[in-house]
Length: 109
Length: 117
Image 1 (tube, one colour):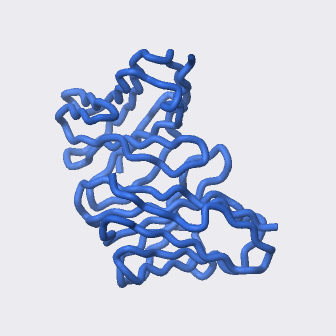
Image 2 (cartoon, chains in turn red, orange):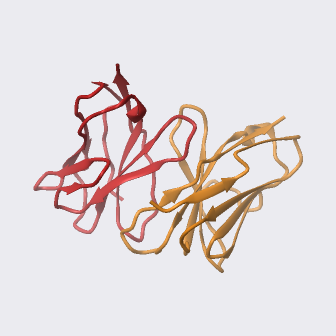
């Protein structure tokens, strides 16, 4: 699976959009970009995934660059409950889900 | 999203005893289940992958005789930590996936915190 690079931590003001970047410059054509988050002492929660088109669901939007070498997860209106570690993972369907170190997002009141 | 339930949520056991953790997919059939371990302030580490009806595949460095995994049905997988020692104290998390090879999401349980004293 391709390696991903994320900033270790970010802050975001409550009510503002949180934009979490992820670099995956070695991504291959059949690898998807997945985002999960883990709130303290809980199991990870699936957020969204995509291949090359931008995706949106009730939780977030995923913007993937045209060359697919990077992506951004957008939480449109961050709340305190969005404080968590966010993981960007690149994988094919057949491969397992390996977690990197993620980005610790802190939403500030 | 689909629901995956782990039991127990936390357990304390004596050194040398064995502990069984259950992982159930409540509203879907999981052909594949995964077991992870997470130490404090670290990321999740994949321990093993189990497909229903077959033996688990363990990641490098994970002792298969110590961490026994059984995936006897499409809705239940168990992880047994045998002869537990204090260094096995960790947060154990399972996840389940409906289809092994498709690009569908995996759903996670709430985790089990194991403390070995």
